[in-house]
Image (cartoon, rainbow, N blue to C red; front, top):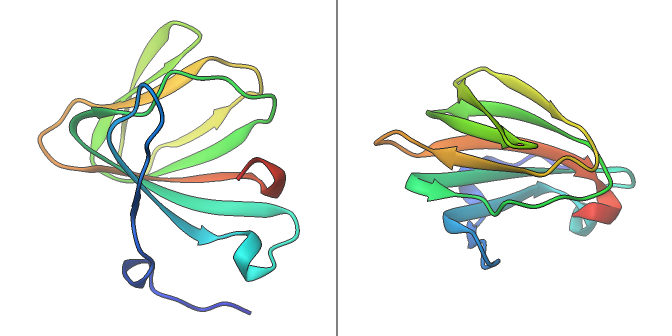
Length: 114
């Protein structure tokens, strides 16, 4: 079992082309011997965004705080605190912070994708 406070897990900058003002915490993953899923928390600073990208696996997203937009296959939709998003595998997507406070969301993916 792992029990930790997310604030005690270090943030690491997302240094991928197209990412701007994004940090990630690996809350649960391979280092914890998680066999199936990884739980990551992303923090996107005001005006920042994750890179526009695709991958074969779906992922589940829960918006913890803030608001912004999600872009999926060219369609932009507003998102905010307590929203849930199922991002299908193969969809081209990104998350953008359009507010003046950090946008934080959980992202659950298959362990092989983390």
